[in-house]
Image 1 (spheres, rainbow, N blue to C red):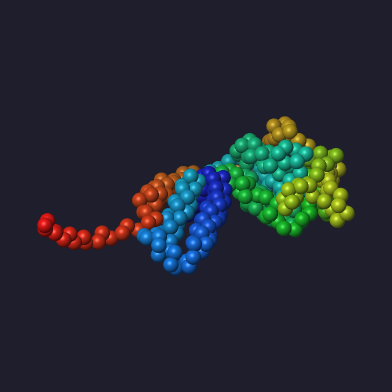
Image 2: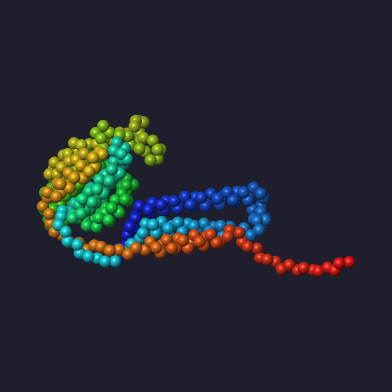
Length: 345
């Protein structure tokens, strides 16, 4: 069983649930504070005939759940319904993406990491006959996605990539090369390409030797340098200003082209500088990969999916309608009125 969200980017709207929660707590606090100002809370609440705090909470819960189901409906959860074996002729490509905090520098707009993601998206559209995998690295390196021909899954994984994934800072390119090399088929000594996207800053000294070892296993290594050699200040998310060192100086992050060129040379690949010429870099990479000897490979993937968005949207609508018709004030029971007729004198 394969479940996925067709539009996973909509799931970011779930952050607004925290806003709803804060709004509810603020209103509840304001009501209790207003009641305490009037006098004893128990006596004052009795004066508000029919008021029900439980109904107020229940109505909020309905809105909360309606929003939750609505967002899931918009993201459209899907289940794979048909699996087919797809045979293609291509190359195994692993992309190693630097997610260190230096990739948040803004010398490439909007920032280095966002531009790198845009490059990967465009590249994946061109590599439609190749298997693709992904490694993320900073101070450590991890296999984010094994080799696959499911490009929709690759794009979904890409949306979750960020500096918060790896708390250890640094640029462990050597370790990234080793992790990527392990992701390839060890029995083959060709049809393998590694693309490293990084600013090369604070790289480990073992990167070049790791590149040579990977090339001996048949991995051709291409590197993409992102950023400017002159550098750019790093934003500090905690303060909203530029990051400073212990001496109070603004930290400048610079592209280390020499390191990335050395790695590409050791891996018998090409080096490209990515600034605003994304299309040119994509074309250079695809030409390099297409020039490699290719192989036939097959993989079982889901080619058809059933969508279930309508059920979640229906539940959301029902909850909103229910909230609309549930009053916050309890209806008072009608008392029996006894009318006593009096005779006129």
